[in-house]
Amino acid sequence: MHQQYFFGYGSLVNQRTHSYPEARPARLKGWRRLWCHTEASDHVFLSAHPVTGGTIDGLIAQVPGQDWRALDHRETGYQREPVTDHVDHDHPAQPQVQVYAIPRDRHLSETGGHILLSYLDVVVQGFLKTYGTVGVAGFFDSTDGWDRVVLDDRATPRYPRHQQLTSSETALVNGHLDRLPVRIQRAG
Image 1 (cartoon, rainbow, N blue to C red):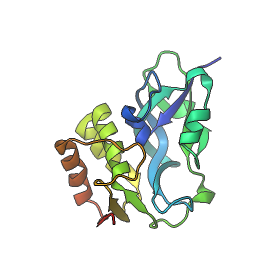
Image 2 (image 1 turned 120 degrees about the horizontal axis):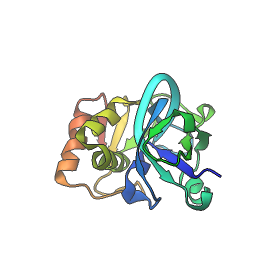
Image 3 (image 1 turned 30 degrees about the horizontal axis):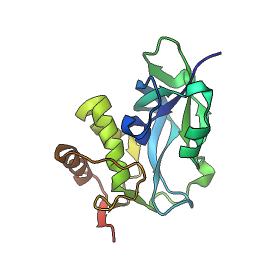
Image 4 (image 1 turned 60 degrees about the vertical axis):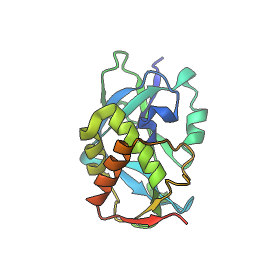
């Protein structure tokens, strides 16, 4: 029986938000990230979808005992899809890999909802630790749907797994947002 792994491309890249073992960098071929608005919330979530020629960096990590329940709970609203043959990684055992994606029929408008800055901070912090500043730039460049409001909730984070950023991490996030078509709005 093959070991079961997930491919994380957003908050799961930040290993401070979970304790799944054997995490290692990986690349998913034929997919791209996007901010996805669903009726589940006013804020958007990162999702991924198949795209010819697309690639996204992330990480793979083991699902202990092949028990997906805790991760399925964390990723409520997403569906798992097998992507073993589309993931490049250096794991010698060649595990079975699945990715979480929000089904297309649950997507609402392309520009609705807002991005929680506390969520984005967590994602960027994970990419910085795993891939450095080049990886952070790659995250922003391989993600669609930036033409929406970013809700600055840093003072009172709404994202349940928020992390404290250093001043240089904060500056890195802010610098990338400055070059994108986002509108920053202070949380009320």
